[in-house]
Length: 268
Image (cartoon, rainbow, N blue to C red; front, side, top):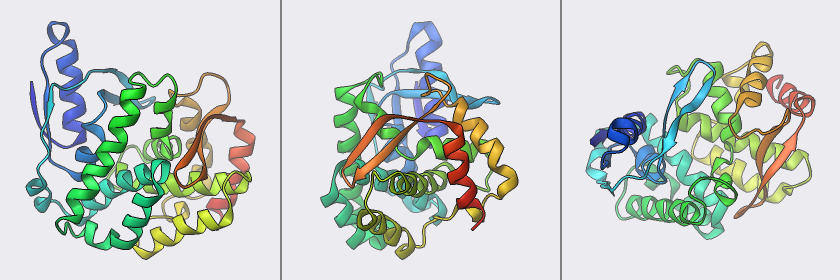
Protein backbone atom coordinates (compact mmCIF):
# COMPACT_ATOMS: atom_id res chain seq x y z
CA UNK A 1 0.00 0.00 0.00
CA UNK A 2 1.46 3.34 -1.09
CA UNK A 3 -0.12 6.54 0.19
CA UNK A 4 0.53 9.88 -1.52
CA UNK A 5 -1.25 12.74 0.20
CA UNK A 6 -1.85 14.53 3.46
CA UNK A 7 -2.44 13.25 6.96
CA UNK A 8 -5.97 11.97 6.42
CA UNK A 9 -4.89 10.05 3.33
CA UNK A 10 -1.94 8.56 5.22
CA UNK A 11 -4.04 7.67 8.26
CA UNK A 12 -6.77 5.94 6.24
CA UNK A 13 -4.21 4.16 4.03
CA UNK A 14 -2.18 3.00 7.01
CA UNK A 15 -5.31 1.75 8.78
CA UNK A 16 -6.40 -0.14 5.65
CA UNK A 17 -2.91 -1.60 5.28
CA UNK A 18 -2.96 -2.76 8.90
CA UNK A 19 -6.24 -4.65 8.38
CA UNK A 20 -6.01 -6.17 4.91
CA UNK A 21 -4.56 -9.70 5.10
CA UNK A 22 -3.61 -8.75 8.68
CA UNK A 23 -1.02 -6.31 7.38
CA UNK A 24 0.46 -5.08 4.12
CA UNK A 25 3.76 -3.28 3.75
CA UNK A 26 2.94 0.40 3.88
CA UNK A 27 4.85 3.29 2.25
CA UNK A 28 3.84 6.83 3.19
CA UNK A 29 4.66 9.80 0.94
CA UNK A 30 3.29 12.82 2.86
CA UNK A 31 2.57 15.87 0.72
CA UNK A 32 1.60 18.46 3.36
CA UNK A 33 3.82 20.08 5.97
CA UNK A 34 1.52 18.78 8.71
CA UNK A 35 1.83 15.17 7.56
CA UNK A 36 5.57 15.47 6.96
CA UNK A 37 6.31 16.60 10.50
CA UNK A 38 3.66 14.69 12.41
CA UNK A 39 1.23 12.05 11.15
CA UNK A 40 3.70 10.20 8.90
CA UNK A 41 5.96 9.59 11.92
CA UNK A 42 4.95 7.27 14.73
CA UNK A 43 2.59 4.66 13.29
CA UNK A 44 -0.74 6.01 14.55
CA UNK A 45 -3.44 5.32 11.97
CA UNK A 46 -7.15 5.85 12.29
CA UNK A 47 -10.42 7.49 11.35
CA UNK A 48 -12.83 9.84 13.09
CA UNK A 49 -16.32 8.92 14.24
CA UNK A 50 -19.28 10.93 15.45
CA UNK A 51 -18.03 10.29 18.99
CA UNK A 52 -14.62 11.93 18.51
CA UNK A 53 -11.36 12.13 16.62
CA UNK A 54 -9.25 9.05 15.75
CA UNK A 55 -11.28 6.71 17.97
CA UNK A 56 -11.06 3.87 15.41
CA UNK A 57 -7.54 2.85 14.43
CA UNK A 58 -4.35 0.93 15.04
CA UNK A 59 -0.63 1.36 15.62
CA UNK A 60 0.97 0.37 12.31
CA UNK A 61 4.42 1.54 11.33
CA UNK A 62 5.22 2.34 7.68
CA UNK A 63 8.10 0.50 6.04
CA UNK A 64 9.24 3.77 4.47
CA UNK A 65 8.42 7.48 4.65
CA UNK A 66 9.50 9.80 1.84
CA UNK A 67 9.18 13.55 2.44
CA UNK A 68 10.01 16.07 -0.29
CA UNK A 69 9.57 19.82 0.22
CA UNK A 70 8.71 20.26 -3.48
CA UNK A 71 5.18 19.12 -2.60
CA UNK A 72 4.88 22.01 -0.14
CA UNK A 73 5.13 24.63 -2.86
CA UNK A 74 1.65 23.65 -4.08
CA UNK A 75 0.04 24.32 -0.70
CA UNK A 76 -1.97 27.39 0.35
CA UNK A 77 -0.50 29.36 3.25
CA UNK A 78 -3.19 28.10 5.59
CA UNK A 79 -1.88 24.54 5.17
CA UNK A 80 1.69 25.67 5.90
CA UNK A 81 0.46 27.27 9.12
CA UNK A 82 -1.22 23.97 10.06
CA UNK A 83 2.09 22.13 9.74
CA UNK A 84 3.90 24.85 11.63
CA UNK A 85 1.60 24.21 14.60
CA UNK A 86 3.05 20.72 15.09
CA UNK A 87 6.62 21.94 14.54
CA UNK A 88 6.05 24.53 17.26
CA UNK A 89 4.53 21.92 19.57
CA UNK A 90 7.59 19.69 19.22
CA UNK A 91 9.87 22.61 20.07
CA UNK A 92 7.79 23.60 23.12
CA UNK A 93 7.71 20.10 24.62
CA UNK A 94 11.30 19.08 23.91
CA UNK A 95 13.84 21.71 22.92
CA UNK A 96 14.07 25.36 23.97
CA UNK A 97 16.95 25.96 21.53
CA UNK A 98 14.69 24.80 18.70
CA UNK A 99 11.97 27.12 20.01
CA UNK A 100 14.48 30.00 19.91
CA UNK A 101 15.37 29.03 16.32
CA UNK A 102 11.69 29.18 15.38
CA UNK A 103 11.22 32.47 17.24
CA UNK A 104 14.06 33.94 15.16
CA UNK A 105 13.23 32.29 11.82
CA UNK A 106 9.51 31.51 12.01
CA UNK A 107 8.40 33.82 9.21
CA UNK A 108 11.03 32.37 6.86
CA UNK A 109 10.02 28.82 7.78
CA UNK A 110 6.42 29.73 6.98
CA UNK A 111 7.62 31.07 3.62
CA UNK A 112 9.44 27.75 2.94
CA UNK A 113 12.88 29.36 2.74
CA UNK A 114 15.75 26.89 2.33
CA UNK A 115 17.60 25.61 4.30
CA UNK A 116 15.43 26.78 7.23
CA UNK A 117 12.33 24.79 6.26
CA UNK A 118 14.40 21.61 5.84
CA UNK A 119 16.01 22.15 9.25
CA UNK A 120 12.63 22.71 10.89
CA UNK A 121 11.14 19.55 9.33
CA UNK A 122 14.16 17.41 10.19
CA UNK A 123 14.38 18.65 13.78
CA UNK A 124 10.65 18.21 14.31
CA UNK A 125 10.73 14.64 12.98
CA UNK A 126 13.80 13.85 15.08
CA UNK A 127 12.02 14.95 18.25
CA UNK A 128 8.95 12.85 17.50
CA UNK A 129 11.08 9.86 16.41
CA UNK A 130 12.97 9.86 19.70
CA UNK A 131 9.76 9.97 21.75
CA UNK A 132 8.04 7.25 19.70
CA UNK A 133 11.05 4.93 19.88
CA UNK A 134 10.98 5.24 23.67
CA UNK A 135 7.26 4.47 23.91
CA UNK A 136 5.64 3.28 20.69
CA UNK A 137 2.22 2.34 22.13
CA UNK A 138 1.84 5.50 24.25
CA UNK A 139 2.01 3.83 27.64
CA UNK A 140 4.01 6.65 29.21
CA UNK A 141 6.31 9.31 27.73
CA UNK A 142 4.69 9.40 24.27
CA UNK A 143 1.72 11.11 25.91
CA UNK A 144 3.70 14.37 25.87
CA UNK A 145 3.10 14.51 22.09
CA UNK A 146 -0.54 15.23 22.98
CA UNK A 147 0.36 18.65 24.38
CA UNK A 148 -2.49 20.96 23.34
CA UNK A 149 -4.33 18.13 21.59
CA UNK A 150 -7.05 17.39 24.16
CA UNK A 151 -8.26 20.95 23.69
CA UNK A 152 -7.54 20.88 19.94
CA UNK A 153 -9.49 17.69 19.23
CA UNK A 154 -12.45 19.03 21.19
CA UNK A 155 -12.36 22.27 19.19
CA UNK A 156 -12.35 20.34 15.92
CA UNK A 157 -15.17 18.02 16.98
CA UNK A 158 -17.28 20.93 18.25
CA UNK A 159 -17.14 22.46 14.76
CA UNK A 160 -17.85 19.09 13.10
CA UNK A 161 -14.34 18.81 11.61
CA UNK A 162 -15.27 21.62 9.22
CA UNK A 163 -13.02 23.93 7.24
CA UNK A 164 -13.72 26.63 9.81
CA UNK A 165 -10.83 25.18 11.79
CA UNK A 166 -8.22 22.83 10.36
CA UNK A 167 -6.33 20.38 12.57
CA UNK A 168 -3.10 22.39 12.69
CA UNK A 169 -4.98 25.58 13.50
CA UNK A 170 -6.78 23.74 16.29
CA UNK A 171 -3.41 22.51 17.59
CA UNK A 172 -2.08 26.08 17.73
CA UNK A 173 -5.19 27.14 19.67
CA UNK A 174 -4.71 24.07 21.88
CA UNK A 175 -1.07 24.98 22.56
CA UNK A 176 -2.11 28.45 23.67
CA UNK A 177 -4.99 27.06 25.79
CA UNK A 178 -2.80 24.41 27.45
CA UNK A 179 -0.07 26.98 28.15
CA UNK A 180 -2.64 29.36 29.68
CA UNK A 181 -4.14 26.55 31.77
CA UNK A 182 -0.60 25.68 32.93
CA UNK A 183 -0.10 29.32 33.92
CA UNK A 184 -3.43 29.56 35.76
CA UNK A 185 -2.59 26.42 37.73
CA UNK A 186 0.84 27.77 38.76
CA UNK A 187 2.73 25.17 36.73
CA UNK A 188 4.15 27.52 34.07
CA UNK A 189 5.59 30.92 34.98
CA UNK A 190 4.47 34.13 33.30
CA UNK A 191 7.81 34.72 31.57
CA UNK A 192 7.69 31.38 29.74
CA UNK A 193 4.01 31.86 28.90
CA UNK A 194 4.74 35.27 27.42
CA UNK A 195 7.43 33.79 25.16
CA UNK A 196 4.84 31.46 23.64
CA UNK A 197 2.11 34.09 23.40
CA UNK A 198 4.42 36.68 21.80
CA UNK A 199 5.62 34.11 19.27
CA UNK A 200 2.04 33.36 18.21
CA UNK A 201 1.20 37.05 17.89
CA UNK A 202 4.41 37.86 16.02
CA UNK A 203 3.58 35.31 13.33
CA UNK A 204 -0.13 36.18 13.35
CA UNK A 205 -1.07 32.61 14.27
CA UNK A 206 -4.53 31.75 15.68
CA UNK A 207 -4.37 32.23 19.44
CA UNK A 208 -7.77 33.38 20.67
CA UNK A 209 -10.49 30.72 21.02
CA UNK A 210 -13.17 33.40 21.43
CA UNK A 211 -12.76 34.17 17.70
CA UNK A 212 -13.94 30.65 16.88
CA UNK A 213 -16.27 29.82 19.77
CA UNK A 214 -18.73 31.50 22.09
CA UNK A 215 -20.05 30.64 25.53
CA UNK A 216 -22.83 28.53 23.96
CA UNK A 217 -20.14 26.11 22.67
CA UNK A 218 -18.65 25.51 26.12
CA UNK A 219 -20.61 22.41 27.13
CA UNK A 220 -19.98 20.79 23.75
CA UNK A 221 -16.21 21.43 24.02
CA UNK A 222 -16.22 19.88 27.49
CA UNK A 223 -18.26 16.91 26.24
CA UNK A 224 -15.61 16.07 23.65
CA UNK A 225 -12.75 16.66 26.10
CA UNK A 226 -14.29 14.08 28.45
CA UNK A 227 -14.69 11.65 25.50
CA UNK A 228 -10.98 11.88 24.67
CA UNK A 229 -9.40 8.42 24.39
CA UNK A 230 -6.58 9.39 26.78
CA UNK A 231 -8.98 9.59 29.74
CA UNK A 232 -9.13 6.61 32.10
CA UNK A 233 -11.42 8.14 34.71
CA UNK A 234 -14.25 10.67 34.86
CA UNK A 235 -11.61 13.38 34.94
CA UNK A 236 -9.88 14.95 31.93
CA UNK A 237 -6.26 13.91 31.37
CA UNK A 238 -4.07 16.80 30.22
CA UNK A 239 -0.46 17.39 29.22
CA UNK A 240 0.70 20.71 30.64
CA UNK A 241 3.93 22.68 30.62
CA UNK A 242 6.37 23.39 33.45
CA UNK A 243 8.63 25.41 31.15
CA UNK A 244 9.57 25.29 27.48
CA UNK A 245 11.15 21.90 26.93
CA UNK A 246 9.64 20.36 30.08
CA UNK A 247 6.08 19.05 29.72
CA UNK A 248 4.16 17.20 32.46
CA UNK A 249 1.75 14.39 31.56
CA UNK A 250 -0.86 12.31 33.40
CA UNK A 251 -2.40 15.32 35.10
CA UNK A 252 -6.12 14.95 35.75
CA UNK A 253 -8.65 17.72 36.28
CA UNK A 254 -12.35 17.68 36.99
CA UNK A 255 -14.66 19.20 34.42
CA UNK A 256 -15.76 22.00 36.77
CA UNK A 257 -12.22 23.42 36.88
CA UNK A 258 -11.87 23.26 33.09
CA UNK A 259 -15.39 24.69 32.66
CA UNK A 260 -14.54 27.73 34.80
CA UNK A 261 -11.27 28.27 32.92
CA UNK A 262 -12.83 28.01 29.45
CA UNK A 263 -15.72 30.24 30.47
CA UNK A 264 -13.26 33.06 31.24
CA UNK A 265 -11.42 32.47 27.97
CA UNK A 266 -14.61 32.49 25.88
CA UNK A 267 -16.13 35.60 27.40
CA UNK A 268 -13.14 37.80 26.52
